[in-house]
Image 1 (cartoon, rainbow, N blue to C red):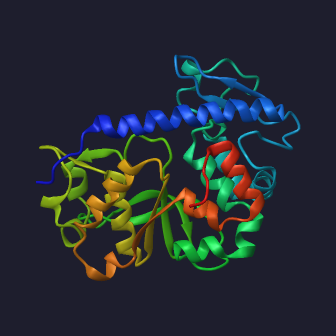
Image 2: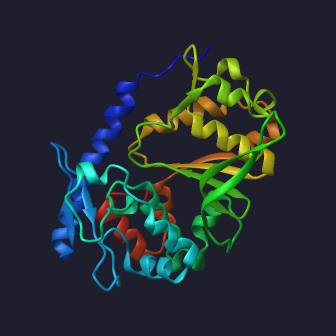
Length: 284
């Protein structure tokens, strides 16, 4: 049985990054005069609100936000309700805060990058990730992962770019975990993984999101990439631990990891500058 890394290590990295992003977001909001508020608590998070005419949103680069509003499938993602908003944030005239309003939202960062019109024009990020050039981003893609009983699990993947699936993380503590019975119910689980070597407790498998997304890539014959921040080596280590347990050699060649910093280096100048100032993501 694989050893389980200390959870406190992941939480420390996550907490430090949340603090940095909140500090940067507050300075950014003040410098740009953007409507925003702070969550309650000792380590407040910045939540941005859209302008009254919806022409701009402080959590998004203007060019990316314009593209999002012009695409109904993309703009639908903006409506995701912040599940803890009523308890942790001041009352808003909109009724509810949205998940993508928060400065720590990995979904907001993902859309800032991949909805940016300059990204598809230069093609550098597609080359970095190994995705199909010119592929239109699909967010919250519902992959069909076969189960032992003949049915399918409609696993939600953060992003699909052609034949590439992407799981994006920023300040999340980990990749979640699940009871072993949940994973053993997937048809291809034992064919894909040397499951005895996977990180686990007596009753649960760790890194559940990674496991199910690898299974989705296997079933669809797609590639799969984990996108993390270079300031989160704990998440990278968790991915490498899972990767080494993948049995099919062909599938292993379709698995990769990249960082937001590498994406920033390949991004167009305006997007690169935004990522540097607001997120502290500097190309490496």
